[in-house]
Length: 146
Image 1 (spheres, rainbow, N blue to C red):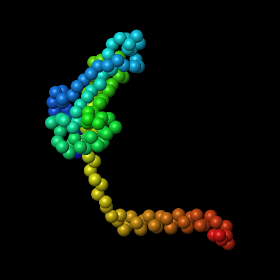
Image 2: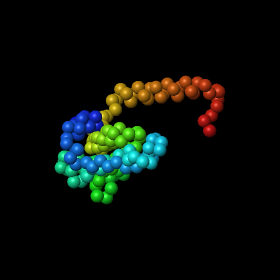
Image 3: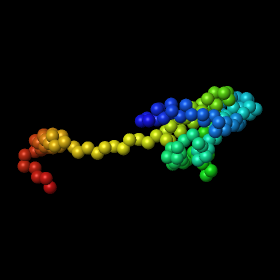
Image 4: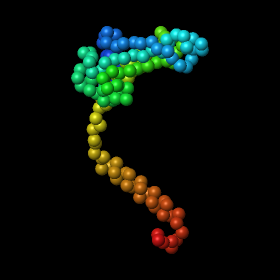
């Protein structure tokens, strides 16, 4: 799995529905009077430490990279209250969950250090010398560098 998108596709194939908890709560924001009466915001809780769906290294990586969203017990909390309907907020919450988890598990490939070729170094220095000559020719004759 080389990209967060591939990891996300793989995660969607796992049965997370059995392990997460969705909770509807009162929301602020759009909804008019409805916002005070109906639980339209949705919160998703997922036990990262206790899940059996992820390998140990994946759990550790996710816990480390999502530390600001995970509480002391290892519960990941994702919330959504952007829409007026609970159904759309539920869908968005699930989308956010998969996206966050995929980015949390993703491990970027390490950069391979490559030696700069001699020809590239020479070209750079030659360009630098040329620039120096151009700028030097703009000086008044007899001006010192002091």
